[in-house]
Image (cartoon, rainbow, N blue to C red; front, side, top):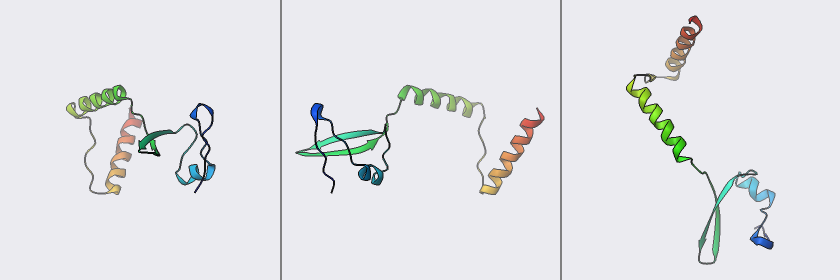
Length: 92
């Protein structure tokens, strides 16, 4: 168990070994939850909803236009398809 000290402005530093075990990196965001007198920190990701909605709209347009890759029965079939597509692009 690692001990940390709460400093001025309610800041604390997590020990390096704790960060390594939790696979945390400088700049990662942590969500703080309080249950009674217990504080839990958990890694989290912030999602830009506007960006996601735009990308989904573009994907839906591609699907409507038929710009989708077919389903593949194996990884070999997928690789063959990608090689053929690459050859087509080189010809143009």
